[in-house]
Length: 290
Image (cartoon, rainbow, N blue to C red; front, side, top):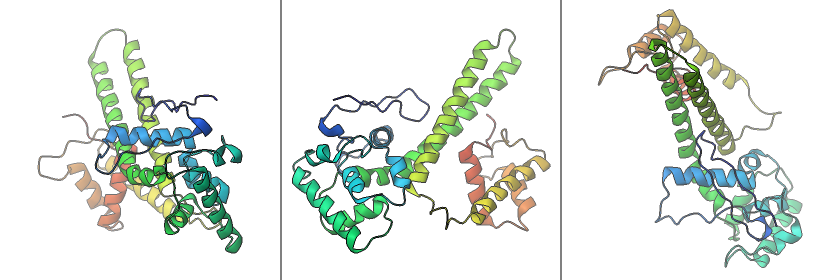
C-alpha cells in the first residue's frame, strides 16, 4: 500500500496537506461537524486534500459519470486508483460499510438501466440523498466551502500582485544589485498565478460549463469585451489600470467614476460593476499603494 500526498495547497504558499495511509486509498478526511466550523485555512486545506486525493475538481466537471465511478467517489474513493474489489471491501465508518457500498452501486445501476442519461457527480449525490443512501460527506462540504475558498484565493492573488508592484516601485528608487528583487518579484508573480489558477479550477468545478455542443459562447465573449472596454476607458482617461489612485474615504474611486461615465451610454450599471469586479479578481486593475 503506497502513501499518496496531495502536495501543496494551491494558493502559491508553502502549505502542505498529508493524506492518511488507509486501506483502499480512502481519499477524504471526515469533515468537521457543523458545530465546529472550520477556519478559512482549514477549508482551503480540505478543498486541496479532496482535489489531491480524489481529483475532485476534475470529476465535478464531468457531464457523464458512470454509476460505479459515482459510487466510489461518494464513498471517498478515487475510481482511478481503486478497483471494484477494493471499494467493495472498504469500511470508512459505521454507516459506510461494504454492504452500504453494494446498496449504493445497485441503486445507481438500477437507475441507469431504467432511465439512462448523462449524470454528473452532483446528480448522483442527489439520487443518494433522495434514497437515503449512506455517502461520505466530502462532496457536501466541498460545495459548501468552495465559493469562499475560491474568493480567498482570488483575493490572495490580487494582494500578491499589489505587493509585487510595491517591491518594483521601491526597487526603482534603490541603487545597487537588483538580483534579489528580481527573485522576489518572480516568486510573488508565481504565487499569484498559482492562486489564480487554483481559484479558476475550483470555480469551474463548482459551476461546470455545459457540454461543448450546447455551450453558449456569446455571453462569455461579451463579458470579455466589457472588461477590455473598461481597461481602454481607463487608459483613455490617463489612468494606469495597475496603479489607480486610491479612492477617497467614503467616496467612489475617481478612476472608476471616469470609466463608468465614459461607458455609461452602452454599458449598464450592473454590467459595469460585474466587469469591474472581474478585473479586480483577475489582478488586471488595482490601486497603487497610498
